[in-house]
Length: 429
Image (cartoon, rainbow, N blue to C red; front, side):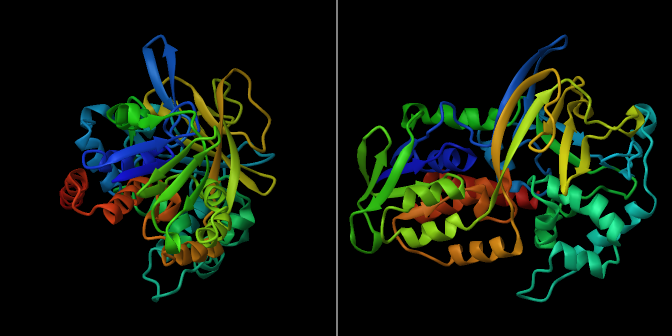
């Protein structure tokens, strides 16, 4: 079959790679470079070049089994990975003493860190314990509801919990309060530390996440068309069926037997909106809320806690009904370089690079829209792929959405079968 994949982020590249041995696949990507939310910068330092991820970065060593399976199939092994203790500091605007500095018992003494725990630490633990409780079928308690049940208290809720959870997407505190607690706290719940006094250990790729997307892009070769944005997709057959026409902004028109739209939801909505049958899906896609975020890579430590003993891998600044994060690459063994969300903060000095992203804000309403979207099958020959479609918005969900889309097109495909088997192996190992 002739198949078009629109978008060359992790989901699009993976979908195309899965289908290429058995089908004639073309990837249309509007940007000059592949990768989507993966933006790896190579910084020259006295130690040599260091890869730093401005976008997606952290991989769960236990939960991201599909992503790990794909890495292994593409030759990205344990030697290409490093372990990062994800400690957390939360500081409110106008104060110098953090409200929370999570412990890392195995490393704090050598690093000169001083945890700040107390009531805030205990209340966050109570919130996470309440969130982890089994919920009745069909219910999804919000962050605000769960915090009330766990007796978190207004001060910890407003100054610690909500800024922390809002920092993942860059949204407002009130939007974080409206998220399903199970999703909002998933990053903490699914990769917990071995003991409360330890830090959760996550995986980074030493060459950045572009190690994986670069290998996928290289394997696709000239099937990948960069700087080739798509204007619209339309179905020529009855009921949204094939042939499907892909129109590019440059004026090209291409007929395909199958199409996979692997762009962010808002972009997918625009691409599908012109077709009267596909427009129903486009309307739902357009209702998924995104938050525009600006991220800076810089050497200026201005967003870090006033005292170095309170520095963590992740440092949240609570201000103006927001929570914005600074990641300290020093926690991962790199030099003192920082990645900061600066959408609502002044730009720091000594900026190396800035990037802009759109982050999904998965409120309870958005989750309901997504469930409706899953049940809506308007075309037997058009699939969606993207991290927004499955579970939390992550690199794992991007790979899983790609595997799902590829299976819908060709469940017996050779690479589809290989990845499914590899996922089973990683899940049981």
